[in-house]
Image (cartoon, rainbow, N blue to C red; front, side):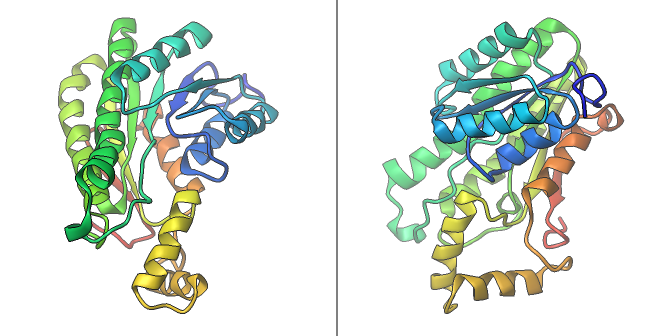
Length: 270
């Protein structure tokens, strides 16, 4: 589809943590690129993998910028927004996707500085810094906007050996609701998407860890069991989360804000 013809032609989307191949961030950007949006690929570093993500988006016809950002630093998030505005002149959709989910350890063995502080700093504080920086720019422009937080099924349900991750994702839902209350007057909606397990690079590490923890002989057996328990018969895909983001960013979803939308094939229903 040409840039001019897409639903998001002329719009600019930033997705943090989007520099990984087959990651949720890439999947979200691909969906918006196919609908004509300008895309900002952002990750902790812009390495060869992130550049490849950007090239894929360009091949889809999108205008693309790559901007490094450590979301655990407020100044980096402010710079990300400023550089986006310099590059494209607008910021319409901001997706807080960057996250750490690979630090798995029993509650009683969690190290405060490593497993706890770092996960909270990226997953929750990073979402706050990104929300604040994006919202300031959107308020100043005065044309509204969309902020979408990529939470998790772990924002609704507890899981073993992931105390910091579960806590951060529950907190992200609270941040979503608090932000929505204040930003609605500016025409800015804030929503969260809560996917179930998706086998991204991060998800693959979880597969290996939990298949052993739960006593499965192989990762394949673990995934088969996961699929059998899901009403739709499979784990999630990046495209499932991307489709939800496309809708939440649309004019049709303008009256939807402060929600934590399950995208789990029926695995999560509250």
